[in-house]
Structures are given as C-alpha cells and as structure tokens.
Image 1 (tube, rainbow, N blue to C red):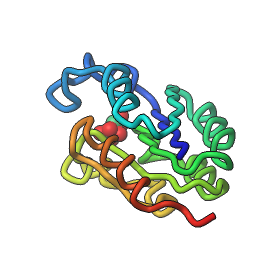
Image 2 (image 1 turned 90 degrees about the vertical axis):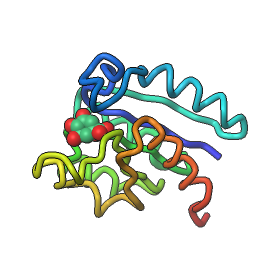
Image 3 (image 1 turned 60 degrees about the horizontal axis):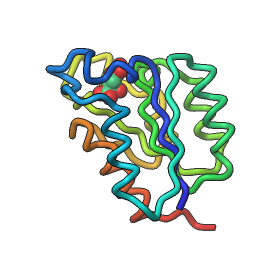
Image 4 (image 1 turned 120 degrees about the horizontal axis):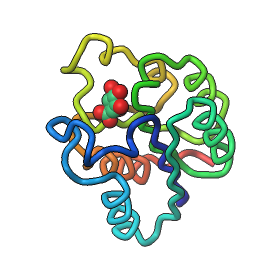
Length: 143
Ligand code: DQA
C-alpha cells in the first residue's frame, strides 16, 4: 500500500502557529510517528506553500499511489485548480483538516475540493491524519 500525504500552505508552522487551534506538536514530528506506526505502508510526505507545487505533486504521485491524504490548508476554500487536479488523477484523495472547519468562520465551511475527494475528515487535531490513513486502508481502490 502506497500513501502520499500532501500538506499545503502554513502547515509547516503547525506547532508554532495558533497552537490553541492546531496544537503544540509540529507536523513533522507527528508524521514521523505516524509513518513508524504503519510499517506495511510506503509513505511519501510533501509540503508546499505554493498552489502550483501542490498540483505538480498531485500529478506526480496521483497515478501511482493507492491513496492520498491531502490537507490543502486555505487553498481548500479557494482552489478550483486543486479540485481539477484531484479529478484528473486516479488515486482516491481524502480531504483532511486538523481543526473542525465546519464550526469555524463561514468561509472555512466552503470547500472547493470536497466533491472531488472520496471523504473528508476534520476536527480531530493531528489525529485526523491517522484517521484518513485508516480510511484509505479500509477502502482499497478497485484495481
Ligand atoms: C486547515 C483549516 C484551513 O481552514 C486553514 O486555512 C489551514 C488549516 C486545518 O488543517 O484545520 O491552514 O486546513
């Protein structure tokens, strides 16, 4: 099983950024533990603050991996280009958020990518990523 975890803008600052919302642990340290916990899964990890780079990464891995965990950060709420990239690739994409976007500001309740993704997991803190991996393992894509 190959799973790509792709993170968008400002997620490199998790741990230091608004800790009352996103917690005190860095994403790097959390994902290192996650990768170690799933010995049978071949992970690739990617983060970028740039929309086009995220699209390039989706296109690069999106025909090879078995699933993608995507936290697109604020691009979630704005990017038709990311939604098009998700629709263009074959790997199922799980939309993930650390915070509960549905109970925050109204503009965060809007997701341009939601309909292109297989499911959405949000509001569990960093554990949202583990839940997304478990979702992909429980729903293997048809080959
Ligand atoms: C986020 C929620 C987004 O609204 C926000 O712009 C982020 C992080 C989350 O993980 O909770 O950058 O995707």
